[in-house]
Length: 147
Image (cartoon, rainbow, N blue to C red; front, side):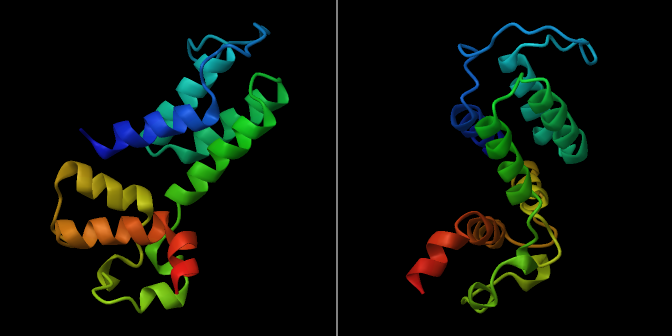
């Protein structure tokens, strides 16, 4: 199973995208998207999955302003985008000193690293190095607590 499918599933779970709280408020549909909370979240998740973060952020802002998306959902989605946009070189220096740190990936974001893993592209780093880089970005708060 691809890592993205798992991440998007987790994102849907965390954002509460079940549609039960949707009020059915209507507005102008964007590119054939129904204007219900669960549909908006699905569209945002699709944009995130495609790496179209600017469009996803704009849709989050519009949906939040139109009360189609709750503030906690919007915050959760924006935090996910921020994490996916985090470059390996932006993590704390203490973590960058870890044994086997893949320094050749310092300029790559979590999204790009996960895409390489999903595509089986090991031209820049081994599978183990890509996994280590993704882990360092995703789990940096927990790892910092251990140091």
